[in-house]
Length: 373
Image (cartoon, rainbow, N blue to C red; front, side, top):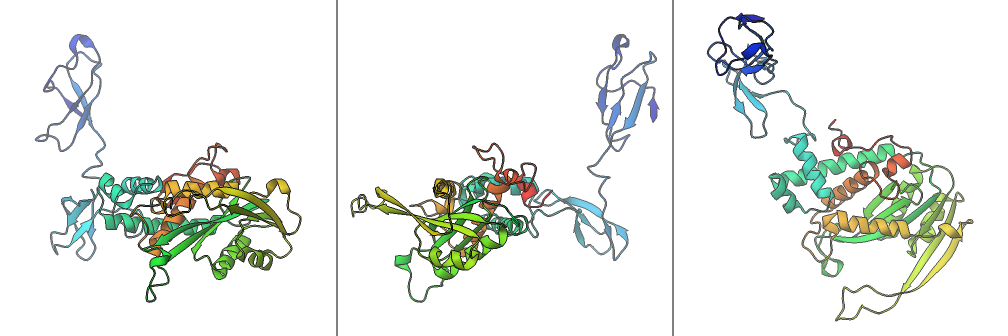
């Protein structure tokens, strides 16, 4: 502690014997800021002690080859301080933790960018709001999608689900099926997202992005089978691949029913291409086991399809925001489902689906979802 008999510069600190405090900075006398404590005596003396300074002196970098303390040379464009060895002139950056592997942006900005993408913003819109380069935003999306897929594979195991609903939602990569040429990549064209949802907890244990073929259907069903335990009831739409795939995958441990919906021709003429067809009839067909008729429904999974259309910009129809690469599409879908399960509070449950299913006990943040905290 330093005791100074001279009065402070600027204003009096003890008029009438009243307590007062002041922040004083005298760069020619002291190297840092000092806090003047409230005065309790009458001899106009100041009791000063240094405040904690974590801006300059708290960070020091040493050049290991030279064993010399580096000098500060300013900041990087991402806000991190830079240092240079006075002997070998090699530059260093202050110790820090990267948000996602090789992404050199702050955790706050990465969280903001992903939050915008998760709420239905496009890549260009996210770029304009955050100020990040569009390539950085896409790299961030891919890295976050990989983390989300790993999280789903790790946490979605040994689940008890009594009533599963399965459906597919259509999208496309680069071009629609009618424009695909013979030499195009197999990743180009129509893509389908297979989704399974638990009717009780609204949890999505598994999904799959691929073609609407028997091979992709089997791959998706095997993924669902490895994540749940015990007997379950499954309701699907009228896709014929489920009739062969579900008995092969689940065997006798399933009560399987299909809900076939028949639509009329209204709205499908050349003058009304995008008008919805009129639903004319719904047929319930029991395929195996003894499913409960009250739970033969696909309403929840179809509502989840709407959530995807609203929350993932690349699923919006009649725009140029469609996916140009299959990798980006898979990353966006994985991020959406991880965020839906762990971070987004379901309006009917008042908690997240993961909390309802007993997988976690709190609402996750995006930073926690990515492992940044």
